Image (cartoon, rainbow, N blue to C red; front, side):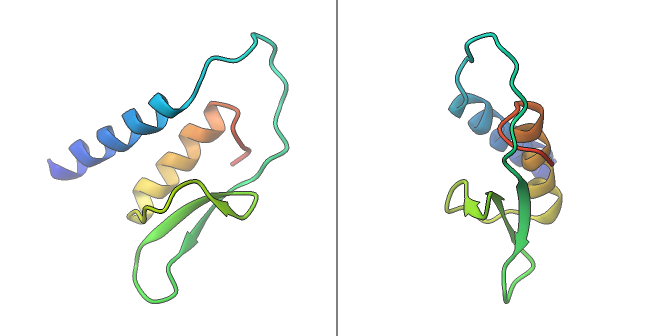
Length: 77
């Protein structure tokens, strides 16, 4: 149950950080990636090698965030 709530909260935050576009669809060339922490089993989401924020996520959450960003045309997944 906590996992569902956590995922929902992350998605709301990501959706809240996005803004409306100009109405024109231009595919992005930016690349989403998910990078594992060097020591722990946690992951960060990156666009073109730059982290989107300072938070670390479980692998499934990080992949879901990358998919949401790709669906919003922020990057290609």
